Length: 194
Length: 390
Image (tube, rainbow over all chains, first blue to last red; front, top):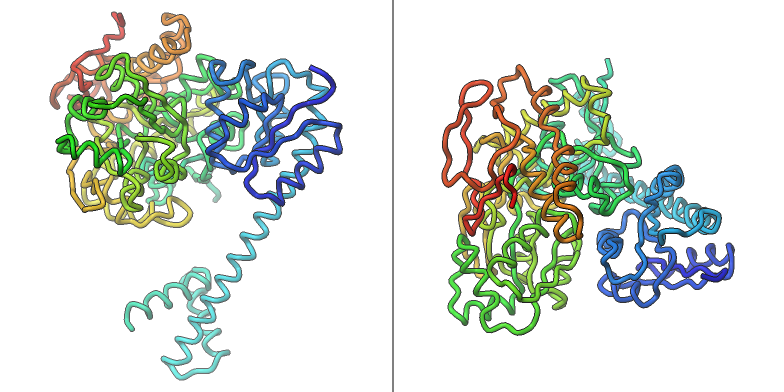
């Protein structure tokens, strides 16, 4: 094994893959390949014969890598996810950051560390972006539902928007429920009755 | 007052029902415990969440803690099973093309005879059979191997790992010919028109421990009050799930977006055992397709662990005796018994049994009265005697 590490990144999203590759390049002149197609995972990895495989913790195709991690898999060298107990702290940090790394047994920690640090920083950022996006989407959906519920109340009871909002909020408080849940129940019920 | 808390990881499957029900129906609260549920994206990440302390306990495939004990896969953090969460529950399906070939050759999709179905699969077939399973360490893998090694010795069977959400895609794209998967994914393959169901998993082994409650080794002994409360809450959840009147509520609960996010009607098929096996709407009824209670369903028999351990060892070229001992030690029938004492759970007096010996449900003596042992036959009538494994 020379100075160059062979790294495989499993990532279907092109833009994310670019960002990951960029940050990995910053750690040295490595041979980096991206696999976007889960169905070709086994074949591509066998061809690339990598030292390190990086994959998002949330990627369901990760279970396919597990097969390759068996010593009798298509790789000559056994791949393991930080089997070494001394690196457990590092493995834990990686899982928390949102990246799983499969590493060839015997790869020296000082060679692994910079690559993994870069990957972890990048995946941590993706994870934050993802949860922010999900929260924004949810808030937007809830706002829409509340607007529809207000509309239903205004029409059914002949009240104005301010009153409809106040009525929803009071009901939610009385029932110890979230306003979005009360609104959703109302929209569903109205749909069934119309 | 805030309750003591345990975080529990699960995969979005019908047999995650006990952990979801234990929390949602208040069984945990009644035991003075709060459960924080974490949905996992894959089996390997769930195992790692458990190993690296992101969760305190998890619903895992019964072979996973055994594989870890044998040094196969995973991060080397030893795991232990405190309870069996479900017995059986998988289905075997084939691609639409293969289903058509089977029908043309006269197979009736009787859905009960594993030998007939297995022989039909290989009649007139030269190409290897490619079968998708969710994980290399799974009851799915063990059942497929046990079944096809017996009905088609010498024939090539390629078992591939395909995550359940990608199973329909894989069979639609012709990458696999058949699959073995937990519900609701088999029914979803039928609904999306890419596959038909051939057999329930229990037609191969009627008493297969499917999912277990796993914890890091030593955790339960260190905190017996908290983990005991969890095991009791899960036992009560299983008993509730075993009542026919609970099924509609259970299906509604599981269907929620934060759990399975699948229509309740599809989940209901597994819970009632009334499956739709093809796009033409043909129905089949399977008693006990998935079981959560009755016949000491939750008891982690050391003989079950030994069966799994010996089969894995044979494939991996490990010493069978050592594998047997290592596997037994991870199914903690001793802790299970301690934790359930005094709540009216009927527990067996023994910790191991001859697997596959019960032809039909019958009564045996238990610690506390009598216990019904459920049918647990293998399709080929063989038995596994843990004291004379060969």
